[in-house]
Image (cartoon, rainbow, N blue to C red):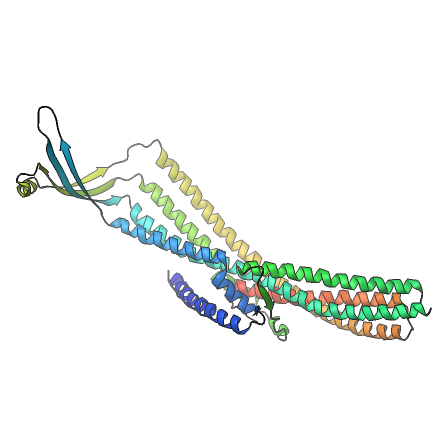
Length: 443
């Protein structure tokens, strides 16, 4: 349990940081607000989600509920105490009306129940600890979803900047083409191609804006932020992108993932809980021993009331033994079912180990692939950009046709789109790997 104690300390520190970040987010939001617009970095988004995401808050409430269940189960070691009082009026033809009453105090305590009381306490303690890891598991899922939405928005916003530049260039080419066509310097087909390209470039801007807006809505949902809220994202500094490509050995990454990911810990807790379930099922074969006691008194009418209460005072204490002999094979069936559940839990744990190894190894390879793709597209985009500048100058000089220019322009736009997508895809993959390694997510 030392691992869990360390984990709890980290959880407490994290809760403190969340509170601090929550307060900071309010202050930062107030400072970073222009015309009621929230200006968030990636870290701001994560901190806001930690403090506001509805599903995460629900998970934390489940933690509190499970902690209360554990606390209550420990109370089963103590006796149950109850008190009762009654007052009656009796009347018949042969006897005059009489008053009578009783007062009693009783207690009952289970001394032995096949060891199931202590097993229940242990089981609830395991569930309480496991609930914390389940919250962390959801936090990892939430972080990855926020990363995906954030970088999709940022990538589309960067693409929009270049697309707007391209639209401005297309508009100028279309105007020049219209003037040349009017004076008979170019064919009508060339002019129509320039007009079509201008329309297509404007359509690309609209499509990118819609994609950006939809991704922004998805991000707001993850933050549990109203869709009407004005949110502006701060692009991360990508100057250190080459440094991000320096990865530890795959063995170190796997070891870190096994130590930090809550998934394997949750499956281990499920195995331990299943073992206790098996023991509890077997405990139903054993007898139950209970201790009980009571004290009480009563009275008839009210003459000599105080004497009656003391004279009729009675005490009782005793032990009871309940031995299960035959319960229609219910206990036998529960034992068999609990053993099957234990085997399933053990298989799930082994599967979790394989899943973690497979997932982390795949993500590791994805980072390498994404960085290689980014480097290639960066070179390709740079080459097409310079070539397009040359072709545009040649078109302005009248030495090439619109077909030649537009072919080169489309090649450049395609290369530019691939470059921007691959850049943020690499950053996304690298940050997802950080999540699996348990590293702090920051830019």
